[in-house]
Amino acid sequence: MMARVIGRSLRIYHAPERRPVLDAFYARFLRPGDLAFDVGTHVGDRSASFCRLGARVVAVEPQPALLRALRLVLRGQDVAFVPALVGAAPGQAVLRLNTANPTVATASEDFIAAAASAPGWEGQSWDGALTLPVTTLDALVAEHGVPAFIKIDVEGFEAAALAGLSHAVPALSFEFTTIQLDVALAALARGEALGYRAFNACLGESMAFAHPGAIDAAAMRAWLLALPVEANSGDVYAAMEPASLG
Figure 1: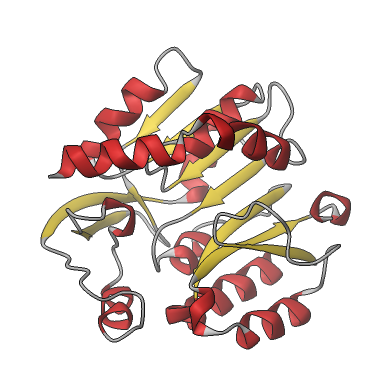
Figure 2: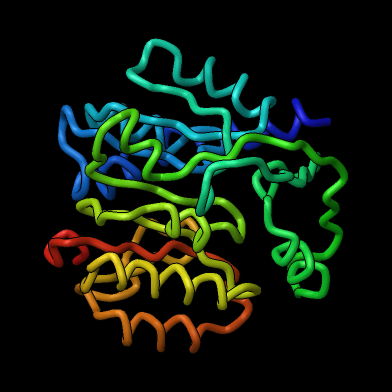
């Protein structure tokens, strides 16, 4: 089943018509020769876009089946693969697997509990588990260098991942879900503590900013809290240069 599900995701996320949309969006953050971290790489559509833009990529993906697919999809590219979770401190953690929907594997028991009673999450089952190493964003920076952009999509573990970053990079994004707005708000607060003052967001896979220009943390917090549960998910973007967020 896993191979069939991954194949379907590859067809969806790597569809040719998506490529120019992704590239145009991420070109505001990355230039040739830049370094990007893709934390929670899944099937690698973002990593592939970063590579097309000429960036070097650190692809962090803990699921062995997805990692095997990534090595094929991204072969020949300037990509370093890291088979680990990313959290607040080095160590180990349990990754709960959803074999019918690998994109929502999570190291957060709170995420699973929130999904259990949430509309739109019916039928999801976390039916496997792996104990895996945990690294931090600081450790990745120490090993690979300071990235121009970090993408974080780790199903309820976003605030923990950002807790392991000591210094702001030029820009980053983190996924949010409306079933766990507390995690989104904690990640936003961590971004503000790191020194970010400019934010924007995309809903779902729209790759279009919800606001015409950068907003501050207070406005982003209010926007997140006003979202209907049906909005489901999206990504918050934080940047040191407001111009990249409009």
